[in-house]
Image (cartoon, rainbow, N blue to C red; front, side):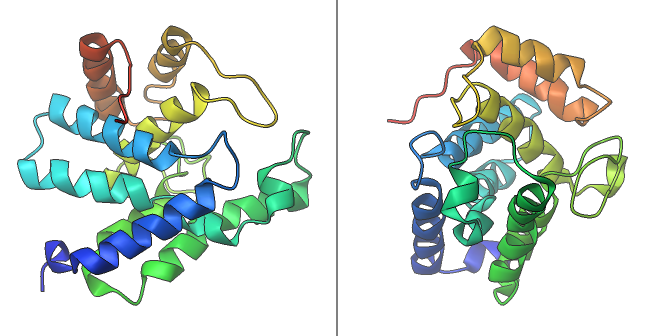
Length: 199
């Protein structure tokens, strides 16, 4: 059975779980929906096939499903995280992958859950993957995730203006972020001014 054949009912239920996990704070509500739409835009700018464009919407919506296991006290904390708290929040990558592991049709989504915080230079987590060892879809989601996080207010910081966030993404090309994915992001950004329409 192909990845696309996972039932709509299962996909919808998982998306609702992911949304509920993020909705515990106003600042993270709809984050994954935004990531999905930016990732779709990046992939379109890179002329990815239609099946990849459609898949990225699901991948983006589920990439943070592991936050369901993150404590409210950590998710909502306004101050700097302790090393123990940071380690706890990092576990959302492993938990998301573990939650989806029993569903073979979502193996690619589980892979992105695990790897979307890996960095091009190997400084990310949880496995310190670098460069092309990072799964392709995870590299793309990483760029979209970084942008959406920066332009959103968080309990511990204010949001950044879209142009500033885009400039940071450009600066991280080839260091923290995949060069090709950053190029696609910048093409998307120039066409849309970085705006994300949810409704």
